[in-house]
Image 1: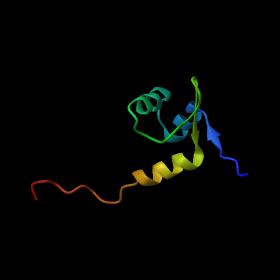
Image 2: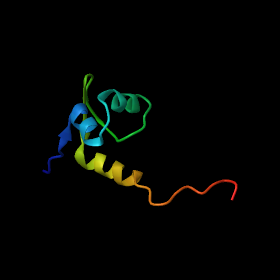
Image 3: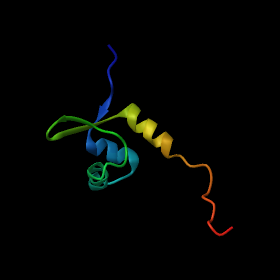
Length: 68
């Protein structure tokens, strides 16, 4: 059985360079990286899921202006 590495909310916020409150707000608005709800008051983030989410956020082109 493989083990997933899970991070706390604070560890995840630190990794992403965000405040704990921003990460919590994103979760409430259902945006940002996916999370695991271990219990009513225990939220964790899978390292692999956060990395996949980061990869999906990578932009390599500037958006085109609408009036070009």
